[in-house]
Image (cartoon, rainbow, N blue to C red; front, side, top):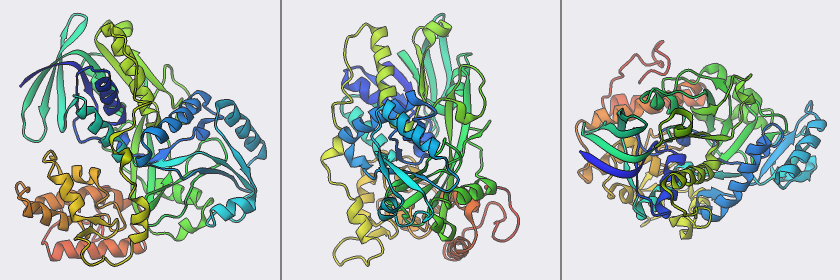
Length: 526
């Protein structure tokens, strides 16, 4: 299939989808192509933290300024995707008050509002904090739903004329002297091939930036940093908890919906996809975060996961934490002589909108169009819809009320009608796509008791293709990768129980020997 478009965006994370929305609001046609679903990369593998910028106020003030500015904008345009939790930077015995004073000065200089709290005031706000803490600083951190935020951007972009091609991979680029004239791609589900002829091409592939640039014979300085996180089975804190020190491993706990997320590491990685969460990383995160909230030591963990940060570096520096979390916009016309090619990389999830704005500004400049950005002014479509978080938090753990409809996911209180609403849009190609659009399988059982119910719904709607048991096994194998690193104590008992259900009732057999039965390969399938 041949397609012509003004702008082709490669990468369906927050930045790519944000560019799509920005261009659509300026009246510029675009197509976005993504090899997986939306949020396939780091946009779906992060804390869900709405940065105040406090984390970078001392070490990276420019990134901190970008964070607090975008923090305020997102609260206005996407409040339905955000929980305004606030955040605390706490000082523990051994932490320097000199650094706290430096932190307060840096926040003032970067425009981040702060409130100094005593030990007693901090414990009143967060009773689970280490009772030996010395004090805290309150900042406007928050929690956000990255999946909902990206999908809302996509929804608005499509409403204004943008188009998306998902589960489709770019295979080659056609060059014509100083331009890229064609992009060849293939649908990874049905094998359909595309030849897309764009006037301008944007590389928004994040950690895959150099893999994509290689198709054009280009390369940029990019450090890949693995950040590992762990999800608890309950929400331990109501505010974001940070350690008041320079950013380091295991110094932040983010409340996100019904759980808390412990993080994070910063480990140089050569792998973009085939990486593992190691037992050492899990132990380190538990050891460090439990210094802030001791209850973590006794809390059941339900999943470990990691994302790869693309950190742009113009020259080799020290450790990954020495590299700026700011973003870089590269005009390959000026840098490499390819006039219609742009790369945007680096940055934070919270700065996706700003990254999209600057990229779209450059496109407009190249096109000779004088149209300003409006994404900082126009709310996302669902902002008028009431948030369901508080109601769901109240209902979880309670018995379903009569007449309330069938519950597919007891952990997250997800009703069948909600899932059917997503399914009847008729555009999903993969089982995981459903999970990106609901919180199904993201609760305590990690899909053990709801995914077979989902398959029942798919059967009822005649939406299953091929072997249902194969679909079920594929899902369980993917979830197993995140469960295996935290498998001990109560988690091990529940996993043995779930394994017996699927082996017994559904007669599923593992692809590899189960680690519950013997030694298997790291991250192996069940």
